[in-house]
Image (cartoon, rainbow, N blue to C red):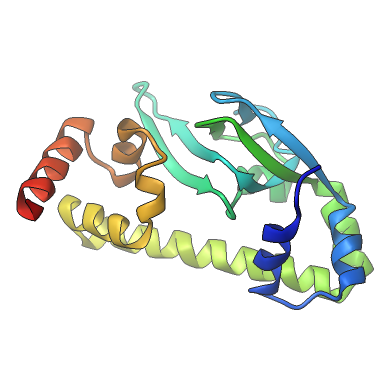
Length: 196
């Protein structure tokens, strides 16, 4: 049985639920174990679930016309992930979402989420807060990509998300930051020599 303590803390950082509300909320989620390299979302299929990561790590990415991969999002413990465009509009996904290690998630279906939102205002408020946070994060990322150099993007990422750097492969981080793996390697080496 999965311990819901971290999930409860995650929710209470954003909004207060009574014990009864939290219990009712959790009944709409299913615990799921995901193996390393397993896909939870794939292009052409509708993303039926939104996932809260209890433990583990995930990468959401798209593949360009020339076969190059572009990482859109990472998710580690205490984060959410899905192909939100597919999930919200219930249309075919454009992204792959893959586990980077054996992981445990809490998943909620689109239908169950809609039911929760209809049943109580407090649940609708939580999902709105999550959506606003995601929108703000994506907007910040676009601005950073347009206004910062590759090195500045790397430094900012290290500063904001130190726990992700050790959990994700270098090629995935490089593609998230919009650079080659070789260039990221150079930046890492430069940083190490500065610190030694």
